[in-house]
Length: 171
Image (tube, rainbow, N blue to C red; front, side, top):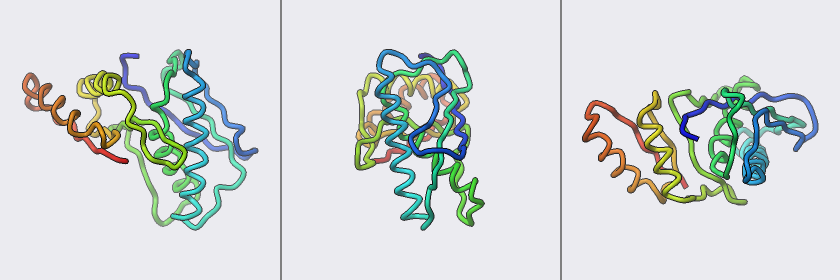
């Protein structure tokens, strides 16, 4: 904890659900793995409806840049979903390509239907403070916490008035 981390997603031919995470998993690692699998399933559904394509037999490798990073909790789902959709659109050289810039962070879990789970405000608030003091320009969070996040950023901006961090709420 205590850092903003970048994650790479690479696709490989293989059996669905045979994905690999290259980092340590903490005590609540089951939540992390569940969120990655859920993001894979939801991305395949979106690929079928949005791109009228098929995800195919693919497995993914996830790697957080800091190899010693220990992943805990279930807030990785939204970031994984966004990354998987961007990876697919680029891998298939589609007319409509999605990108997820390294200056954008996504925080939030996904439920079975693909809705963003709010999670605890305390955890999000701590991540928001870290994001504010990083090179991030935008942060995508559960819409249930958007107003509180805007207030928290305004409080931080009193001390750092030239710092701008855009808050985007999604459900």
